[in-house]
Amino acid sequence: MDDRPEPFCRRRVAVVGLQRSNAAVVRYLLARRARVEVYDQKPLEALAPYAGALPAGTPLYAGPDYLERLDGRLDGLAAIFVTPGMRKDLPALVRARGLGVPLWTEAAYVLAVAPRPVIGITGSAGKTTTTTIVGEVVRRWRPGSLVGGNIGLPLLDRLVGLPADAWIVMELSSFQLELARCPPTVAALLNLRPNHLDVHGSLEAYVDAKRRVYRGQSPDDWCVLGIDDPVVARLAGEVPAGRLAFSGLRPVAAGVGVEGEALVWRPPGSGGSGPARPWTGAGPVLPLNTVRLPGAHNRQNVAAAAAVCLAAGAPPTHVAAVVAGFAGVPHRLERVRDWRGSRFINDSIATTPDRVLAALDSLAGERVVLLAGGYNKGLSFDEFGAVVARRVERVLLFGAAAPAIARSIAAASAPDWPTPVEIVPDLATAVGMAAADAQPGQVVLLSPACASYDQFRDFEERGERFRALVAALPESGR
Image (cartoon, rainbow, N blue to C red; front, side, top):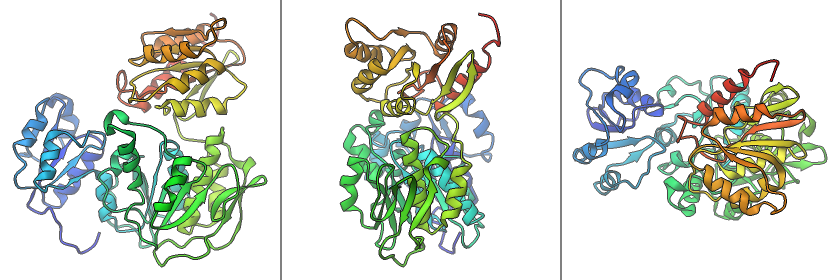
């Protein structure tokens, strides 16, 4: 990547959590001759696919006492790489920090050592759709650029040999950002709503993690802000970089906004001397009628993606071409099947109540049967219950949070016309019951308002299970 000395050569480095992004961390560290030791709460047999790739003799401490084992081996550690979603206030990690041992996530370390300019995109909703569009545009504009972070493959062991004009595009979660020291060249903060409070502990801590996407930027960098979001708009004054806005509702002074029936780019009055050179010409980027994604929230996502790309210097023609051909990302209002006159839609990504409300907005006027439930991340269902009680024909709930969701809907339902709510054992039962009574013109919407951890590995596995269940519905007969 560059000629800086390797900080981990022949030094002990702990990797906490072996799967997913940390498998790339292990490969990266071993290639740099670090003395890697691995800690994971899963039993050895569950780690077999990953453990088999470790060199013989690599220490692997597995099982429920993994953090106690780490706590006893902190002296002499050069660093600890943790899996992003674990709490960073666990006693062993707190003691490590007290001893001066730096904590990293894979994404935070990529930000620190990236050899090319970085676009970093975060927010409570819309990150993956926005990042996917930006990634496709940047790859057209700068072939050989990388896309990763919270989306796709880890980046850390793919940073070598990038073309000189390449960029790195990263989706960044709050878990990845809370240990970040180095901000991206072009940052984007899309929106802020309560999320992951079960891990962060408070809304303040969650928002503070998101703020790290721009904290430490220089005046030569750029930050793209969603000004339709009141929390983001309030934070704009503390951004040290050049500021650009995006809006799916109105014009903006500098950035991308709606003017008439088009998204229009207004360049900043002056630019810094960093690697990002915003597109200089003002004018339409694309007609709104070429956006294929449903819902007002997706208009926001497209406006955000356009602003980010143009802030980096990509031409508007690339943005327009990508958006015109972009049909969406799996598990995000994904139309799975039309069956007996009803539509089955997979919105498994909706792991918070706010995201379900956005889905319902995109289906305004439709007759919705809602499938929801799962693991609650410490969020309130009060507003969700009130909207569902007004706009949904029937609700089928499953998972650990089902009773709490049912109470919120019941509290908001009209006494003489209560919304039908049923608690069922699992997603398969919910799909079967929805199909058994499906009527022409109805939309059967999986939009859970919850995480998946009580019954599935992640929201993707939940969405894939929904797809399979819907695909298996018989073509004929009741």
